[in-house]
Image 1 (tube, protein in one colour):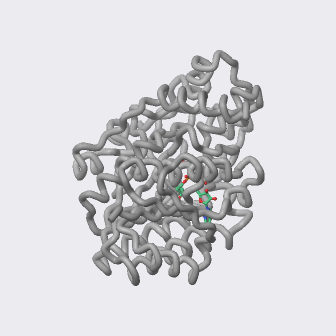
Image 2: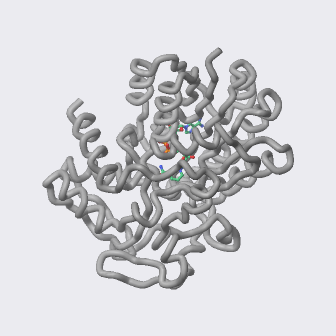
Image 3: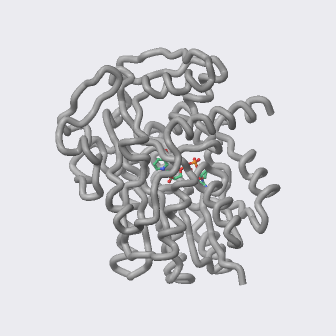
Length: 352
Ligand SMILES: NC(=O)c1ccc[n+]([C@@H]2O[C@H](COP(=O)([O-])OP(=O)(O)OC[C@H]3O[C@@H](n4cnc5c(N)ncnc54)[C@H](O)[C@@H]3O)[C@@H](O)[C@H]2O)c1
C-alpha cells in the first residue's frame, strides 16, 4: 500500500513543493488548503493557480478544502487518512500583517497547529510530524548582537559571523510581532508533543524560504516579490536599514529534501534552524544586483527610512545541527540559481 502524507497549506510555496516531492517518491499525497492566503493578502496572494497545477500534474494528489481552524473537520480528516507523515505549512505567514488581524493570526498559527497535532496524537501518533516554524521565534534578539556595516550589507561583528544563529539562541524577552508570538506558541506546542507525548516531531525555524512557486507579495516572500517587481518594472519599497538587511535564502526543494530525511530517521521534539546559511545570504541591495544581472532590467525602488517593526537587521541560519543530525542533507541550490528559477517562473506566470 502507498505511504500516505498529509500536507496542510498545500497551495502555498512549501506545501506545494512537498506535495510534488513526495508524489514523485510514490506517496499518496493529501493536500489541505482553503486559499486563505488570498484573504490575508488580497488577489495577489491567491494560490488557486498552484492548486490547479497540483491537481492536474501531480499523480495521486487529492485536495481537501478545509480551514485549519476547523477543529472537528481537521480531526475527521486526519482520522480518515491516517497518514505516516504530516507536514504542517498552513499559516498566516506575515510578520507585518499579523498586527491588523490578531485573532486570525493566532487562531491559524497557534490554535490551528494544536488542532492538527492533537488530531495526530489521537489517530496517528507514530506519524512523523514536521512543523514549519520561523526564525521570528527569536524575535528581534539577533538585532542586539554587535554588527558591522559593510558597503552593501550588515554582518555580525562577533562569533556569529562564522556560522550564523544557532537553535539555542534566546527566544523570549524581546520584540516578536504578533506573528512571532503565534509562531513561537506553535513551535513550543509541537516540541511538547515530542517531549511530553514522545511523538516524532520537528520544528523547522525557517529563514527565507523561496522558490518558483511562491505567490510573493509585499508583506511576505521578499525575494519572489522583488523578482516580480523587477520584471514588471514596478517599484520595490525598501524599509529602513539602508537596504543592507541580510536574509539567508533556501530553495523549497531543499526544504522538502530535509523533511524526507527527517521522515526516514525521525527524532522526538527536534528543532532546527533552516535557511540557506551564510553562503546563500544577501542584502536587499545585493539581491537587486543579482536580479538585474539575470533579467537585464534595472530594479526600480523607493527607500522609506523606517524599518519594519522588529525586522531583523542581519540573520542567517547556523546549519551545523541539521547537517550533524542528517549528514546526507545539504543546500543544493545557490542563490543565483534560485533567482534564475524565480525569474523564469515569473516570466511564465506574468505571461499567462
Ligand atoms: N516563506 C518563507 O520565507 C518562510 C520563512 C519562515 C517560515 N515560513 C513558514 O513556512 C510555512 C509555509 O510558508 P509559505 O511561504 O509556504 O507560505 P504560503 O502563504 O505560500 O503557504 C501557506 C498556505 O497555507 C494556506 N492557509 C493559510 N491559512 C489557512 C487556514 N486557516 N486553513 C487552511 N489553509 C490555510 C494558505 O492559503 C497558503 O496556501 C508557514 O508556516 C510559514 O510561517 C515561511
